[in-house]
Structure formats: structure tokens, C-alpha cells
Length: 188
Image 1: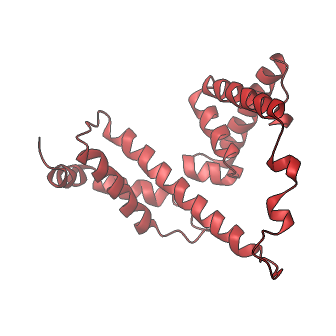
Image 2 (image 1 turned 120 degrees about the vertical axis):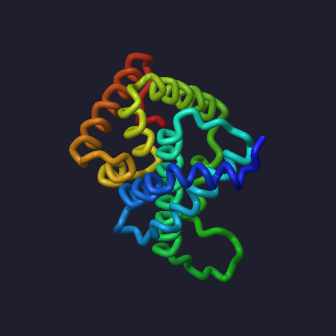
Image 3 (image 1 turned 60 degrees about the horizontal axis):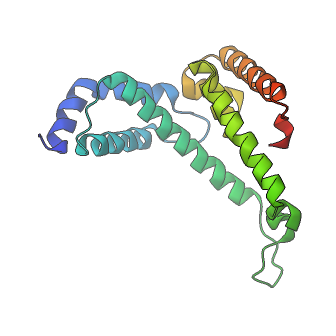
């Protein structure tokens, strides 16, 4: 089998411009993310896939998924960094965590019944999510990861109204299937 470096070189000769255009298209411009960094990370992930001798049956589809996940990962990192810097810790003179960071004992140590019910509901929610049409599943999945509607639109290459519509329809279907099973989405 050919080495990953030569396979990557040939692959990028053919799909490099397309990769660059996809990164430029979905890179959020308001979060301080550098498109070149996303492109480099996408190339690294592609190289790793080729190194594992993976055959890419549909290269543009694979690249789109890689660019999307690289972008989502970068957005999460920016969001986490912003949240970390937005909440300064009070100096309590102790190494113990501040109470509001830990939460109450009940929240951090639920009863076995509560844990089992929550686990059952999460499994059901995942199954229900998996039964949604692909675009709705993607919109709801991103939303459940904490992305806002405009961010979902940017990541997916959709208009904001399309992202909102897919999200609301997907959430409605998810809520209805949970209600039909006697579960409430609010208990998640």
C-alpha cells in the first residue's frame, strides 16, 4: 500500500482547492477562528485517515464531515475558553471548589433511581434523535451541544430560517416521541 504522505499529496492536489473553499465557507467569522488553522487541522485528520489505510469512497462528503467537525471542535474550544475567562473565581483562601461550581449534593450525587431513569431517558432520546431525517438530526444534535441557531446555520451551510425550521421541527418530533413514551424532555 502507498504511504500516507504520497496519498495525501495526490488527494490534496485533487481536492485541496475544494477543501479550502469549504473551510472559508463555514468558518465562523465572529469567533476569532482562523480559517488556515481549521484547514490545517482538516489536513491532519485526513492524513491520519489515509495513514490508517482507509479508503475514502466519497471524498467530498468525507471532507465536508471533516471540515464540519473541525469547525465544531474549534467553536467549542472558543466557547469553553470564553466561559472560563468570563467567570472569575473568588479567592476563598482554600483549595476547595466554590459552592456554585460544585452544585448541591443532590445534583452531583443523584439517587440510583434518578440515575437509572435519566439513563433510560437519554437512551430513548438518542434513539428518537437517530430516527429523525438527516438534516433535522444534525440541527437538533448541534443545538443539544449548545450551538445557537445562527451557528447551526453557519456550520451547516444553511440559511438561518432553514436552520430554525429544521431545529423546531426536529425538537417537536423528539418531544412528541418522548411524550408518547410517557417521558418528559424536561427531566433530561
